[in-house]
Image (cartoon, rainbow, N blue to C red):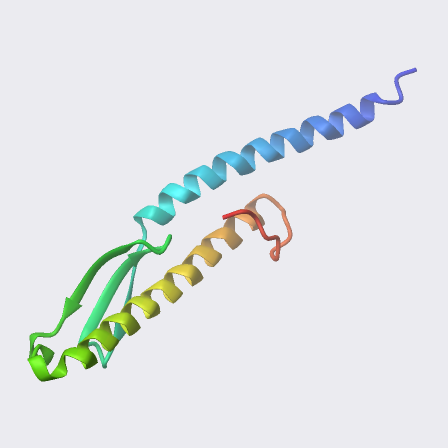
Length: 114
């Protein structure tokens, strides 16, 4: 008559784990928005800062390359620096996600909507 109670306990544990994961994911989203990473191009002549969520926060351009005849080169370096920063941001986000999945006892290769 009470055979199903074991399954209810399992369901309660699963629900608790899901709630914890949801709370931790919300906190992670906030953390990622605050983490900044920097990418660079041209040996550091152009630098870009982005959040771990990929939002561009700033670009620095060494004044020595700001000549009208170098406009296309500078544009390419800016794009490259932003791309580098975004790649670093994505890697940082993956690292932070791996920490959470490990804390929750989930498989390291679990793909969560993020």
